[in-house]
Image 1 (cartoon, rainbow, N blue to C red):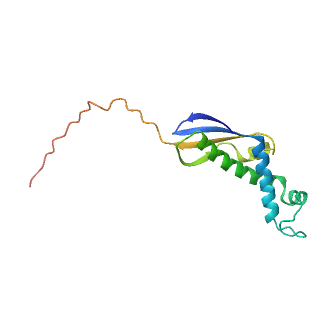
Image 2 (cartoon, rainbow, N blue to C red):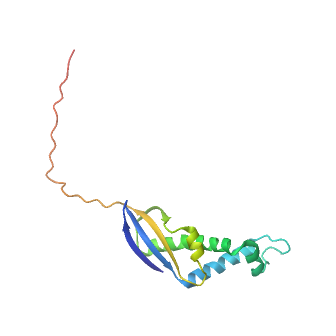
Image 3 (tube, rainbow, N blue to C red):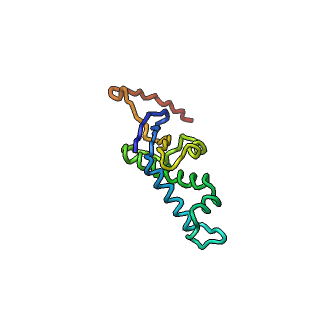
Length: 142
């Protein structure tokens, strides 16, 4: 997995994650296998649905979307670990999910763009030799 980092404003790091063709194909096949074992299609026993019937009934877009969700989640998680980024909170997807579905082809590389929140950098210019003056408090007694 190839990861490129860029510094974004508001204490964020942008990630360009390129997922290898082997992983995109494996994930797609795994999703089809899981759906085939759980799909309830009339005329077939559970887990015995032929691949072509499954693709016709569920549609390739739905299967691609399921595979993409898994690829995005695993890809961002692995990229954060690989780059040792001290992430705060959940990463956000910067790419449009619809565009990713259109561009996603099993067996071809996939590029995902995400943003991760990190702790802000603190730049202290001068923190020694500071002086504070106390104000005199005047009390009125009645």
